[in-house]
Structures are given as structure tokens and as C-alpha cells.
Image (tube, rainbow, N blue to C red; front, side, top):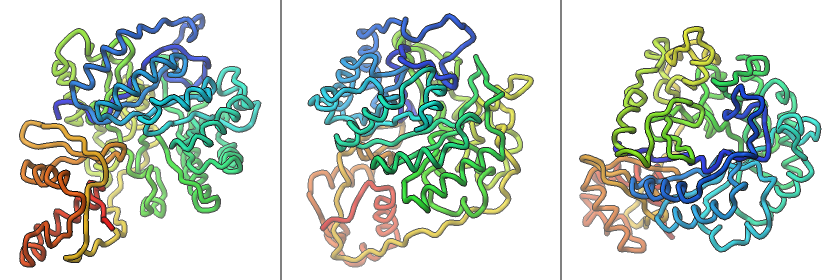
Length: 434
């Protein structure tokens, strides 16, 4: 691809918290996250560059984005009007009702809300002096707004035993989507003491399965962890966290508020600046990530390789005595030797079945193909020009029966036609109409 699909835009380094697990922490004890200055004009220039690249999704992060509320709203409107999906990562404490009621919020796809614990003492410890009561009040504001959001609990040894209690309390507040994500390793300020060991990660996974099965909550892990650490019975299930793999420098990248480009937010290496040189130069410097140069040798023959991509390369680098990004992820066990087979829902087509596009189309021309997705659906797929023209045709019609799209019964029954329609339905580019 000539550009990523998703960009994490760190709009500010300011933050009202100093979480000990934050990937922005370094060894400077005097560094205060409240003292940074944000060049709003420069951030908007970065936004214009991203629109020009025709990316599909932007995640506004920081620091804490709500340290710059007006900038957030300007970015939300700008990206939204340019057909780019917008999500916001936030600790939520600075949220106000006025912000939620702003007309520009119509462009926000979702929020990812950080909550390390619902225990007041643990919350204070994990956030560097945060007030849980204030957080809960703002969380209820967000819930009542009807906007989409998930709550994410970054987990280390300090709060590992509190996962189920946190989920139960959130459920009592009416929260339905919950994630527990193992703390990644910060290369500048590694916290080996509180970093989870393999068995502790398995405990986290089992807690999430319990929360899903017993509490009925939607669960996730918002980082890619090695698939080989998952128990086999869980691997065969349809959890969203099983679909997550490292996409750093492949379909995603991070951009700081000064324009510096990195493969992901955890990576401290600078590959260029989006405002100071042609983007293709920076993007080409990341070719090693797309070629899987940093994939551990042990992963090469794993049957889950395409579902995993070797876990987190930055955490692996931090644990390596040689500072080697090709090192094994510390949560990696043994390569998976058997294919992971999951039962898939069979789509049965009939001539009278009506289909239509599943929302607003996003697309970008690549060298000899097109990337196509539906705004706010996270379902970008690569197609050829003929199929792209077919999708453009569907934009012009509200609904159409399959027999009408095929033109005749013979074409409708052909394996090629049915395969295309089933593929577009499974990727949620199309949906079955009324």
C-alpha cells in the first residue's frame, strides 16, 4: 500500500494523569505532562496531510486529547467531512456535557475509555493520583449520550486480581463493552517488576472469557498478543481479540503532534516527518515492517502466523538483552502446529434476495488495485478494478435483487458470481436488504 489505513494521531503530549504504565513515560523524573505546549496550527497541517493520503481511520490520542477540547472538535469535524472515521482514546476525566452536545460530535465513530480499576485506591495508584468518583461521573455522561464506546483496563501485576470486579461494577453502571489489555513494555522506562508473566496473561484471558460467558459483556484485548499463549479451546471461539495482530508499519502508523512518524505508538524510532518531506520517503523506510523482517525465526512455520504476526515487536525488543526486535515475544510459548478451524456461518443466496451497500463507501486507488471499506466498519479490503466498478454501480441504486444484478439465472448460479457476493457480504461491504 502507498499509505496506511489507520493512523494514531497524538495531538498533544499534555496529560492530566501520570500513569506509571504510560508508554510516553521516560527516565526524566522532572518531566511533567502538564507543561507541554501544543502547536494547534501544526496539528491541523498534519491533518491536511493525512486527508491527502486518503487514509480510512484516525484515532485521536495523546497525552490526553481532552486537554485540547477545541482542537479535538476541529479535527473531528475536518476528518469527518473528508469521509475519514474518527475515534478518540481518552481517560475521560476532562469530559463535559457541553462537549458531548457539540454539533461536531456527530462525526465521532467511538471512544476507547481508559479505566485501570473501579477500586478507588487502585485507580489512584494506576493513574498517578486520579479520582475514581470523578471518572465514574463522566462515564455516566458518556453512557447517557448514546455514543459508542468501550472501556479498556490496562493490566499489570498491581490490578490483575481486579479484572472481574471491575467488569462487574461497570456492568452495574450499564456498560456493555469491556477490554483488559496486558501492559506493554516501555522501552524508555521499562517496568519489569509489574509486567505480566505468561501464566498471568492466561489468567487475564480466562477472566475475559468468564466476563463474556457469565456477565454477557462484549470483551476484547486492545493489543496484539501471541496466539500461541491462548488455550486451544479459546482459539476455536469467535472472540474479537483473536483477530488482532501486529499491524505496525503495515496498515497502521503513529504520528506525533510535531509530525514525526513511527510504526506504532509504542515504537520510539522516528522514520521521518510528515510535514518536512515527501510522505513516501518515510513510508518506504518502514518497508521492513511490511516484509516481516522482524518476525522471530520461531514463528516462521506457525500455523497462526497470519493471525498473529509474532506478537509485539517492541515488547520483545525491550526484553531482549541485545535490544533485538526479532526476539521472541515474552508471552510466546510454542508455535502452533495444527490449523485453527472455526465453524463459519454459511451464506445461502437466492435470486430474489436484495442486497445493498452497508454504508458510506471509502476507497483509495493503489497501484493496480483499490482499497474499499465502509466508513466506521473497520472492514477495508483490496479488490480489482472490475469489482470496484461494480461497487460504484451499487452506489447508484438503493437495493437490487441478486437476479437483477446477475442479469440471468445462469450467471446467478455461477460459482464466480456467488463467491463475489458472499465475499462482499462476509466483509460487510454489502448487507442483505429488506
